[in-house]
Image (cartoon, rainbow, N blue to C red; front, side, top):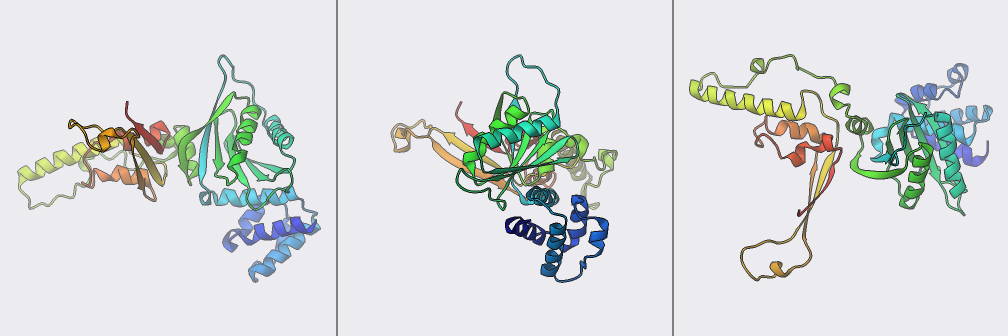
Amino acid sequence: MDETVSEFFRRTILKIPLTEMMTILKTWNFLSENQLQTVNFRQRKESLVQDLVLLCEENRASLNDAALLDIIYTQFHRHQKVWDVFQMSKGPGEDTDLFDMEQFKSSFKKILKRALKNVTVSFRDAEENAVWIRIAWGTQYRKPNQYKPAYVVYYSQTPYAFTSSSQLKSNLPLLGQALTVASKHHQIVKMDLRSRYLDSLKAIVFKQYNQTFETHNSTTPLQERSLGLDINMDSRIIHENKTEKERVQRVTQEIFGDYPQPRLEFAQYKLETKFKSDLNGGILAEREEPLRCLVKFSSPHLLEALKSLAPAGIADAPLSPLLTCIPNKGMNYFKIRDK
């Protein structure tokens, strides 16, 4: 094991939290149980990392072994990445072909290698017929940078791929070509959908959020839910409040469902419109360029926050379709223009 691979192992192991070290190493399954038992996991982390690197050297670990360890770490910490969604499509009249995962991996790797000599591609199969792909990009004159890889998660026999945002935007066309050819699709487009929460993105594009996320309190009749009313209030006011609260609750449930929402952190709206006025003249009336405005809604859990607005009395029910259509449209980037 040369110094480059040894350093890659050292830096990969160093970023693993001590509380997750044993779990990740066992998932990796490269070091034997007997080898792991010889390691003192209570010593200083620097010493622990050195002991583990020595064991990797004993087992003649390769660059690909280190890349697999890095994939597993990323799977445990997928929320540290920002994920984009790409959608592929077949050509007119094209039928769905039988899918072979090994053939997909071989084709994907060949396409990248053919176009770019210095690139490292590693795969790890995951649940639900998914494959995680780690790509360390290089250039024609520089070796792959193992510390700034791109990740792709592809679910076989689906038109969707999820990619971690990469600094090397120039490689996106090549990545798209490799995905479409290897998965036997015709073209690929980037969706207006992005989040740190990969599972939520998957739930949105596969329309699984009303099955994947269990419902809660769905069997409780609406009239049995606490409405938080003051028992000393006039009975007519109580009836009016109760009726309105029931209406708001019903409308909110019809729009969002009675289950936890997929997790997104923001929704962004870009408005472009020509200035319109019944009055003649004025600087804005002569403006050829449209007026532009950007509005961004942010929250640790945006859809749940939107869902709670009307019941909390902060907004009227129903909310604007521009806010409630996010899961159904599979978008959290919107461009609004004049018709």
